[in-house]
Structures are given as structure tokens and as C-alpha cells.
Length: 578
Image 1 (cartoon, rainbow, N blue to C red):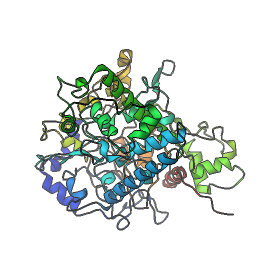
Image 2 (image 1 turned 60 degrees about the horizontal axis):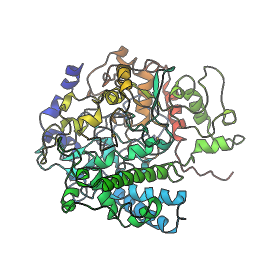
Image 3 (image 1 turned 30 degrees about the vertical axis):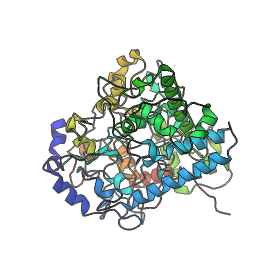
Image 4 (image 1 turned 90 degrees about the vertical axis):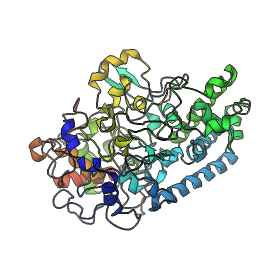
């Protein structure tokens, strides 16, 4: 199967010039240009004819990734030759929210939930906490796109967002910025995930954060907090050398006094740092294998304890913000319908989509809406048992998503100027998901992210769980569908699935419906003209593929109704006076 996949991207292997010429022909321009995302001008179905004749960069006519990577990433960043307007808007939004957080800290009652939420907000929107002071958590998790990627262009092409560290010796053979292999998950509603645990009766894992569930919440009792501890020392994201350099940068911030006011006087200011801490704080990770925590190791035991506590407390404040009303709002049209069951809130098609969602389409099996799946009957908002459904059951699944050969990460297989290789496997890399995490051969291990002293980032915390790994290879966490369509404008592209292969809601719903029936179920290599319309490529990991989907028998109109229902899950709904 791998040989078939590789044949489909031979053109990309011929050189970056071909790739860049394709992408540059479709330069990004927010607010103007072709349709993207899940926008329709009429009632025609995207899969019933020629598809979108003018798809956005990186996207084919039928809403899936074109298998050619964008390697010259720097040109689309601020100051680049083809600066992405969305990135400019993104940076402005980050700064605006950061300033708001400082204002909120100044007036929040000391010791209150509002105080720690404002503190978490400041941490999430602070670009100075990355190794090059150019990347915040919010760079990949911005409100206007449902706390996922904030650039339509990068969502459509690279799926992941560039990290903090440029690669100066790429020479067109690989990406010129370190970049991840996964589409950023949403922050919204993530804090409601339970601590990762194995249910022996159901023979399934529940809880955790990250696509591979590796932020289990075992140590802190909070998966969202442990997720927040991952990016600061992730070499392809914020890129800090170790957790001590992150805490050092935190100690220099304008809100460090607020941090100490909440988490304890001296928790930052009493740490004695090495004389060369400035140089170390500007050095990208990962650290050498024989010195996994180079700055932390130089500290006294007392200061080491303070660093670990500060790292934990920062993460807990970020999780508090994510659980708060600014992020997890429960303010969608669907929520309004549940709160007003006697009103006709949902349209006929939206209500029909909900009934398909929990019936014929079986979406509700994993994306739980608080009701049961049914084959007969009709549900209305008045019948719902759960008035705050999360649209995920916090388990994992392999829906058979194809490999996304547009990921620059697949070409990040040569030493950068620091000698770091993000992806030693190159094009042979496949995302093993939860199974990779359970066997400690998953994503965190591939990129060389060290676990940190007592932190355990990315490592299986329970050796007994490794025996279950064969049943979880290829499975990734079931994402919430809340805010799945939240976007700043109709033509803004969002990426879907763990690797961002799908670029429209229509495409992923069509995949759920027809994975096993297009081309009589025969998979063909990625990159064909009618990919997503006449055929689907094979699964990235052809193990543990969910067999309850792929042959649902939905009509094009029923697919559209499901999409319309999912759009009702966007927060910020304002009811019109009746």
C-alpha cells in the first residue's frame, strides 16, 4: 500500500520549484476569490457535478487536499514576498486578546475564577513565551476560527501552522520552517474531557487531550492542563529548550506579578537562574539526548521544584481559561433550540439533519448529542435528555482518513541548521495515533520531544496499557463537532481530520457516506483529478478501520442536511426577534 501511495506524489519529489509554482498561482487573499470551506451559492451538491471550479489553494475541486506540499513557508509569513493577509489579521487578534487579558487581570477579584482565567488568557496569547518570541498558543488556536488554525491559506495547504523556528538550510528540499504533522485541535470544550482511563468492559480508552490522547491528565487530574504543557517544549511548535527556559520567560512578563499573586509570592521571582540563561532561552530545542533538561539540571533542588510548580500552575490557568465562558460558551443555535423547545428555532432541513445525524448516518455513535441513535421516529429539541452535549464521546476511532501528502512534515527529514531532524522517517511516516502513544513510538517520540522532569509529556503513563496498542493503531481522538464550521467569512478554509486531509464539511460527510462505495470500494492513489468524487485513496493506517461508516446510503440532499445541522453548533448565535 505504501508503494502505491508514494507513486501518487512522485511529482513532489522532483523538486520544490514545481510545488511552489502550483501554489503561487493561487495566492491567498481573504475576503476575495473562490469559494472555500462549506459555502454554497445554491442548492446544488458539490459532489453531484464538477465540484468547485475555482477551489482555494491546496484544495481540489471536491474539497480534499492536493498532494503537493508548500515548502517555502516563509514567503507567506510577515515580511515575506507573498505575505498572507490572514496571518496579519491573526497577529493583530493575538495582540488584541493579550491586551484584553492584561486589562482583565487588573480588575479581576484576587483569587477568583475570573483572575485565573484572565491569567490563562494572557499565557495563551503571549508570543514572547516561544523560543523566538514569535509564536503564541493562540497562533494555532484563534477564536475566530473556533480556536483552530487562523489562516485560510495554511489550513488549505499545510494543514498545520508554522512553528517558531525557521529552517535556514532547507534549500527547497524541505520546509523552511519547522512545522507539525497534525491539524491543530480546537480548545473549545476540551477541558471537559475526563482523565485518560481504560474501560475494561468496553475495551476502550476514554478521555485525554491531543489527537493521540497523550495528554492524559493522570498527574494533574486535568487533560487540558497537561495538553498545555506540550507545545512549549515541542521542537516543531514553540521550540523552547526545556521547561525551565519557558518558566524563565514567564518570569520576565508584564503579568508575572499577577501570576505570583494567584499562585504564591516568590513562585517565579525567587528562582536563581544560570548566568547564561538569556542565551539558553534563545536556543531552540530539543536538547541533546545526553542532557535532556540542560537548564533545569543546573538549578538547585528548591528552584527545580519551583520551576515544576510554575509550569503546572501556568498550565492549570490556561485550562481554566479554556473551560471558561470566553472559550466554551454553549451559545450555538442548537443550544438556543434546546433552551427554547417550544420555539421553532431549527429549520426543517437542520432538524432533518439532526435526525439523520442520530439515525441513518450514525454520527451520534461517537459524536454524542445526548440522545440515542434511532432507526425510526423523529426527535425535536423538547425530547433531548442532555442540554449541554459535547458532540464527542472522548473515545478514539480510525475512520480510514487517507494520508495527506501535502504535509510539509513529510519532507522535514534532513538536519536543520541546529542538526535537528523533525521526521527521520520522511515519506514513510504514518500517524499511528493512540497506538503509537501507547507503545511510545508515536508523534512525540518521532519529533524527539523529551518528556521533561516529572512531566511525562507524550509518554504512556501505564506500562500495562501497551498490550492494548494493536487495537488502537491508526485511531485518533473523536473531536467535538462544536464550532466545526466557525469561520470569519464564508470563503475561509478549515481543515478537518487529524491530518487536515478534508477541507470542507461536505467532503468529510461525503467520505463518511461513500468511503467503501465509490469506485466499488477500490482505493486509488491520491492526486487524481476526481479524487473525492469518483474514488477515495486508501487509509493512512489500514488497521482498526471503523466499519460502521463508509456505506451509509445517504442521498446528496441528506448529506447537505447533515452539514446544515453541524453548522448550528457554531457558538455566538443571536436569535432574531420574532
